Amino acid sequence: MRVCELAGKRVGLWGAGREAQSAYRALSALAPPSSFTVVSDEPASSEQRAQFAGGDAPVSFSDGEDTQAALGGCEVVIRSPGVSRYRPEIAMLERAGVGFTTATNLWMAEHPDAPAIAVTGTKGKSTTSSLIAHMARSDGAGVVLAGNIGVPLLDYLHPAEPVDLWVLELSSYQTADLERSPRVAVLLNLYPEHIDWHGSHERYYRDKLNVLRDSERVLAVLNARDERLRAIAPPANTVWFARSDSYDARGQEIRRDGEVLLRAEDSPLSGEHNALNICAALAALEAFGRPVSDVAGALTGFQALPHRLQLIHVAGRVSYIDDGISTTPQSTMAALAALAGTRVALIAGGYDRGQDYSELAQAILNSGVAAVVALPDTGERLLEEVRAYAAQATLHAPLLIAVQGMHEAVQRACEALGGEGVVLLSPAAPSFGAYRDFKERSQHFIRAATDSQALEVS
Image (cartoon, rainbow, N blue to C red; front, side, top):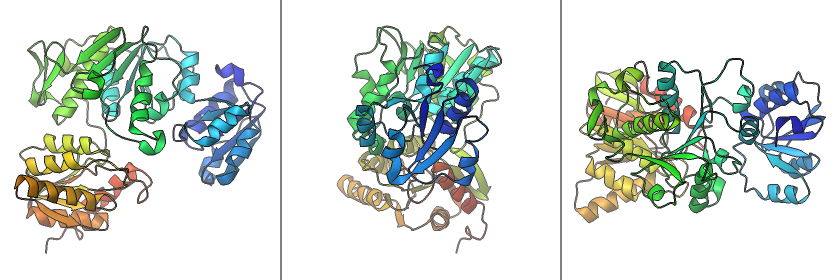
């Protein structure tokens, strides 16, 4: 479906956030519908409503139980990423003749042969996308970085300046019903995640892999260390990274065919998982036709993204690191590996999405974590896994502490370190319920970490 096909139609916008606002602006400017219906599960705030103003088409708002009735009067609905494509209302509306699309599919239809690299995966998407954009810009390319990273694609439907490379960060919510693959598609990893949106882990994996749907057209860049990716039937044109005959990581060092391309001390990012993100970015740029000859030079000025192993405060010999983006056990395990050899008090816990904490418990014990400070709801379950594995393996368990809130967690973590080490927020769980999103949770951690009264050691 093209944007021009929406002109004069009754258009529904399912969601009132950034993506829906971007779609409203794009359609109002380029293909004004006859009307807009903005539908959300919760009432749109006054600030959100203000973003749906200025166009010629009338706008109405609906929320809650009125969703199906409100959207039933539309000819086409643009689904925001946060709205699961598996909600029963969608099937019922489609049977009634309502068409569905997304901002990502609208953009792809306008740019079917765009010079684009799309990046997806359970973890590392934003960092890898940013690395690709940074290194391409260092080579003089005109780059647009957009998508799940917080810049809606429809804001760049017709950019004013020529674009040499589009870098698209895509979540599983955006790849699930993607109708066309990009020229180059990077798939970083597949871990169990987002079962509440996809309905099952198997469907989540399938929806991620949908980015490779045009198997004869797409050039796939895949992680050879990921067992689930190794098990798929790869597209005809596939490049693997993270193996000896390609870009590979040894700790934070980057190699290619045995040759050192980036020394560990020259890397702007901590941890082997980030070294693998750099490998993915290098492989993607080479596959695209823009190989990087000077890796260290291309990475000059690159900084870790917020909430990703970010040092946010130092008090005496205690450092506070925000890794709040880590909402899976695997990403928290990567954070612990990056801090190997450091005395760590781990703060973990959050919304219970049924994730398996057995491997994380083993990593906690094997890495010598000094203390685990557990937040609701999953924290107690993690502590139980650590106790069980310690008993089974006859290992000495770290100090295990259950708390009810972030300020208490930070204080108890600081006390557990005895004046030296790292207080690490790496939750291994989403933030739903207690916080609006992971950023709000991290901000609470940062406030607690910089509150001298909260950190007094008794």
